[in-house]
Image 1 (cartoon, one colour):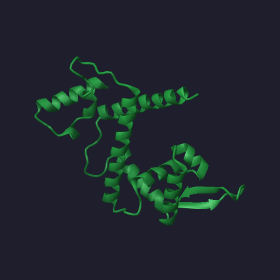
Image 2 (image 1 turned 60 degrees about the horizontal axis):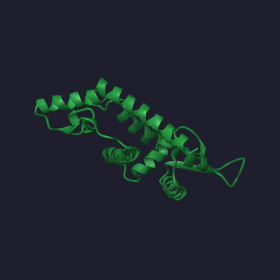
Image 3 (image 1 turned 90 degrees about the vertical axis):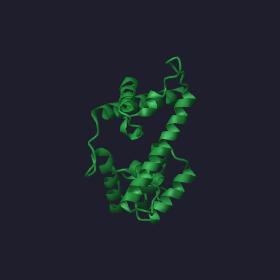
Image 4 (image 1 turned 90 degrees about the horizontal axis):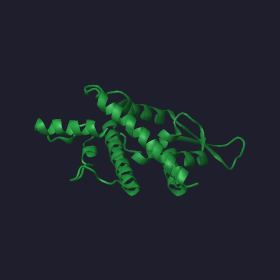
Length: 185
């Protein structure tokens, strides 16, 4: 992964192209220090994941603006994707998305009020609520998914190198999640 990103960054430099968006993942190439090796700690990884998550929320905010949607936040969009096509209890959603109860409660109330989520009492336990997406939410999720799964009209197709690097990054982050989960036991 590092060599592919490094090659892309070097090619962009040689071409005189300073636009970072033209390289697949320019941040990967910056891992090389003066001696060519930089020690990366778990804290560095956690901070990078947190910053990447914030940037992704910025991307979602831009997509919401492009779609003309102003009654939902990027964090609430992530809640919609965590609910997906399922019908979940609030507890299941909290566990699935690793949310704090108070934040999720506030966001769920906002989503119900904006008609993105249908909330109904459970048939088995009237104290428990069941959540499912409304048609409005499914349409928004489909529109956002279309910009990430395929290519929007008029844009360049995703490069194979970038797709491969995303797959590798996902695998590494998933193994890291499992490692950190195991460390808690």
